[in-house]
Image (tube, rainbow, N blue to C red; front, side, top):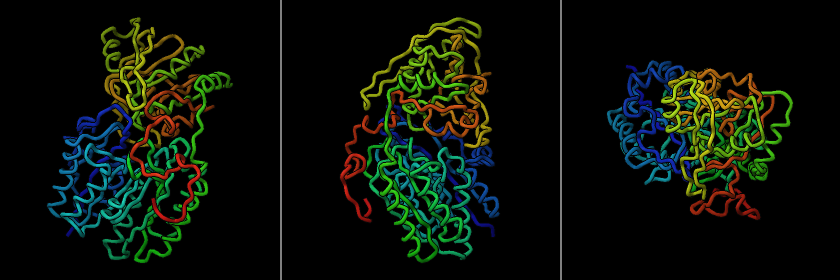
Length: 499
């Protein structure tokens, strides 16, 4: 008989400093995106859920998708939303299955649980203590004992921008299928180091993370271990289990995996200074961008990026660019439903003056919303929907809500009803703007923009704009993290003990 799998997605990266709430409505179509709808939406896409569906298909398994929920990073997940999503998954597992395949994030914080993923796995284990569970996690996971104890196999993204989401699920799936065939007996070990690494400088494509990820990749790809993952952590979360970590999946014996684990983590500690971000005045960064020859010059505002929980309506970088007289520029998307409504009512071709952005205060950062008064013509109006063609989340549909373009003569600004990280050129091209032909491209992103925009960029300038996703960790007030923690405790010494 065909095996039965439960395949599900419950993904959220929680920024505890973000003022944006995360109810069930934030999880795109979460209440109806299940079963055949979930499969149709995700199959063939470069996502963890898409990868797990592929695993199930190749195994010839019968499978159900009781929940396929994913929301843009924001504040705490409400208790009601968390309970609705977990109940759908747990109730399906109760019916009986041969394996569970979970696309999770690893940094979900709910109103009543600091470790959203660990709690889900605990609930599954209570009703199915022996069922194999394969979990694909984001690179920014905050690893916990509960996740390790609840899962059978864990794999994490190897890239940032995350262009290997489907492959991460395939890696977990391959080990799962070998375990079901009694070819291997997965045993997981893990550890961490008390390093709060800035996500602007911990991408695996560059040092110091490149060396660590290289060790893990080589060990897995050569068969030294079944799976090996390194997790940078997500620093915009004031929780006790924030740290850089690694997980090794071994076959029966863990001795060789322990050597690899300690080598990875000890190297991380030796390279800890490289995980520090060094801020710079915004005026200097914008002036540098303006002085560069040729284009496009991509200016990435990492202080207000959606993929880390930003409001996507902070105008500090755009305001400084206008102040310094930048021309031939495009910018956005800016999330401002009220301004979108005004532009739609005015109509294409109409001249309009807006109080753009700055609608949301950020109390945790001590920031008040500051709209930017700006005049221009309504250049275009769209439904804000397009299919991703770039290497990150390829094949998925982005839904920005109703979207309009304000043309000031010097800058074309995309304004949307919903937040959307600009990792694909479609945020501009779907509304008639070709960023490849612009001198300056102003976007709100930390690293994901590199998937779609780095190939077209002549230059890239990182901009320290205001917001609740700032890379300067000194701007955040942490009260719940476990101390000592680098870089707050610079003179700390460490052996091989876990945090």
